[in-house]
Length: 297
Image 1 (cartoon, rainbow, N blue to C red):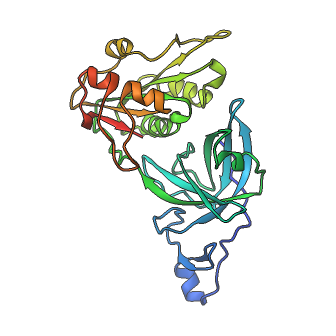
Image 2: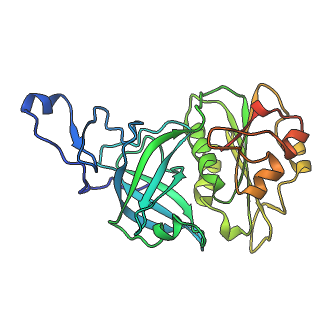
Image 3: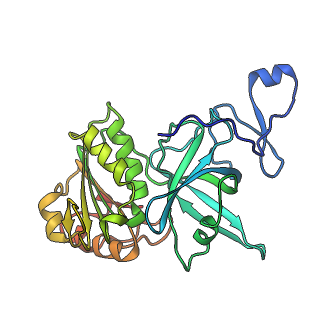
């Protein structure tokens, strides 16, 4: 993990409201110069306010994907997100249009001082060409949280995570927090597909998680083309493989799926909208799962 960040210079500046008031709580100016109250130091509290965060560091994850680390308003700030949730990112084009996209953080939700995202560059995209043009100290506007699934420890004996490409981010958020929670006995199996071993995102973090919590977390990598000393499966995540290697449909298990449209179409079908899971189709339906037993990020 990263060392504690120094207190950043941002648009969140304390306002003098009298010694007694300041002693009791903290007040800040958001980017629209509106006074907001921050008792708990949670940054994303669902108040519909856009917050500017500055980039602390950018790290290459693969040839087309980077990890962006953003400073939170103070070194004691936490994101305020719950498991599992995301945020919206925004920038304004030169013509004045808003470009807004959702991103799931991969940093620990209780971590203080920073939040980080793993983001893939899309040549024809509107957001990622802008993000990939930025450098440390540049800012991006965020708001949230966008709650995806309210995780309750020990709701299931086991869960299966099916992912491909950058679809790993919400699945990693789940796996990371479940595995490290000693009070949560849920067993997690992740099946993660990519084109080549070099395209596997968060591999070090996933391998470390499996090494540290072998009784709770297992990851199986799939690649279209194996290279070097790759240890995993070559080819797609097939229905036959799922039938032989994941828990059978029951009230004691749940499947979470996230990946590009072709991956979703084969395994579960795509979501019909941001809050509409759509119908369950594909491999998981063929294996006997019902709509309530599969969640699409």
